[in-house]
Amino acid sequence: MSDSTFATKQIELLNFEGEILTNDRGILRRIKVKGDGFSNPNEGANVHVHLKGTCRDRLFDCRDVNFVVGEAEDKDVPFGVDRAMDKMQKGECCLLYLKPKYAFGCKGKPEFEIGPEDDVVYEVTLKDFQRAKEYWEMDLKEKLELAAKVKCKGNQYFKAGWHFQAVIQYQRIISWLEMECGAGLEEQKRIQDFLLTSHLNLALCYLRMKEFSHAVENCNKVIELDEHNEKALYRRGEARLHRNEFSLAMTDFQQVLHRNPSNRAARAQITACQDKIKEHHEQDKRTYANMFQKFADRDAKTGKRKKRKSVNGEICFKRQRRSQECSL
Image (tube, rainbow, N blue to C red; front, side):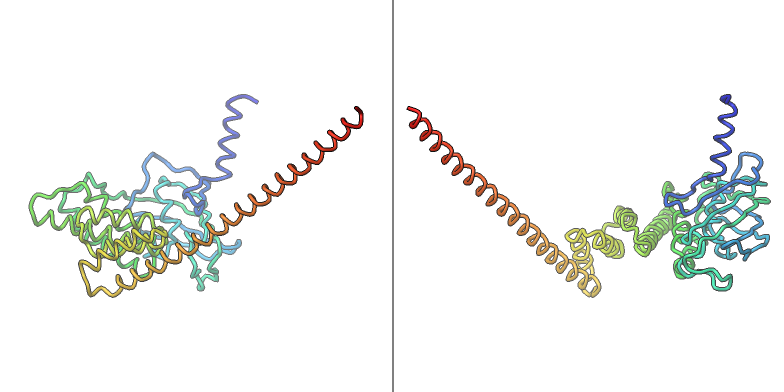
């Protein structure tokens, strides 16, 4: 087989197996028809697609639809389809194999007879798209106006329980404004307010998603800007408590209580931390007690074996002496 034939076979195999688009293998993409050009839809782009959705080989969705990348849920398009858009080119047709997390989640889609744990497959054809402005193409006024709209959209998604989608919106705001300084005090304050709110909301989303390390990171960002921020300290404490960092969590809740003595939730969390620390210490004591007992038992057995060997050796020595005396 020639090198060129071997390379072609490799490409065909790769195309057949598909491209994994997420770390958890929740979205798999197989290209049926390649697209044109080198441009892809970006976050906020307007796209026109044709969709065919199937579940267990049954067609449940077939339509043309326009939506904004990052806001596909508004048009009843699964999150997984939305996340694949930035990989597609105009004219491309692909199959997207979606795990429930990226399809219809734990609720399923009763109107389509799709259960809460069902995988789905979407055939997606990207007919056309218009890219959104990148952050470097917008002036500060545009960024602030758009940030207000995107914040509302993120809040809407959060209230609906669509935490992945909410995260995307809050991250967009941060990407636009984190490097901005502002021309005057008013602009600087608006920028800081958007950044604080976005990081706080991200922390809350990540707490709901049980991604506690990300929650801590976003709380830290807020505390860098406002070291006494009560919400950031409390949410960081929650995340640390879930990570079994009980002492650090208690320190955060104590700071909240120092700032606001009437915060009952923080007081309750301090008690929870104290209980966890006590429970952890008791568990350690039991673990070490068992460990020391095992060591003691092992040493006792070793001592018995050594004593037995010593006695046996002494008996052998006496027998040898008697034998030698008889031979004389």
